[in-house]
Amino acid sequence: MKIIVGSKNPAKLEAVREIISHYPILHGAEIDGVAAASGVSEQPITQEETVLGAMNRARAAWNEGARYSIGLESGLTPVPYTKSGYMDFTACAIFDGETIHLGFSAAFEYPAALTKRIFENGEDVNSASKALGFTSDPKIGYAEGMVGILTKGRLNRKSQAKQAVTMALIHLENPEWY
Image 1: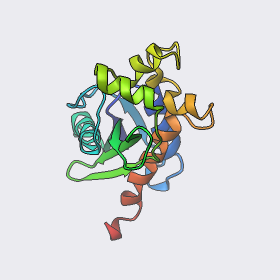
Image 2: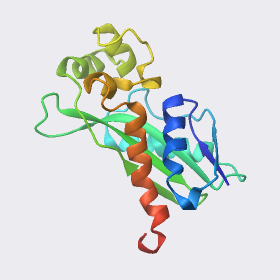
Image 3: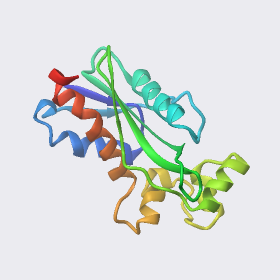
Image 4: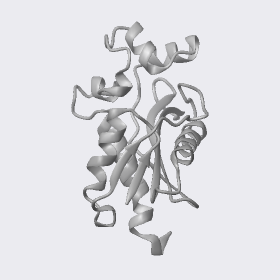
């Protein structure tokens, strides 16, 4: 069985590899990553745009040799009562050639200064977090991510992606209910 991930991001690929090892229905699956366009902005800023990015990546990664393709996209979504007005989450879309199966990670809030810079300057989280001194890494999304920085390593980008994949796999593991 082949599963294609619509990304070359090591954090996303490793998340999928680790999670599928816990699923008998996916035992022994070969995981490949391919560059797949999200078709959305570099920094998605709504739930709809983030989900669409994950779905676009999953569909773009699909080929007839695959059993499943997976798209992962992180973005911001408006959340009432938060300090900045937004929270970051990861969406997972699993495509089986016909149907999309969705899952989300837990969400967390960026410091208000970071969210403000993203919106005012049109930057993505990588460049905004570097400019504000949260990191010196220009591609934190390929490493620990902002969640890793803010939780001081307790969670990281890979663990956030694993949550989203796990939630989407609920559909595949319980097809009689979906």
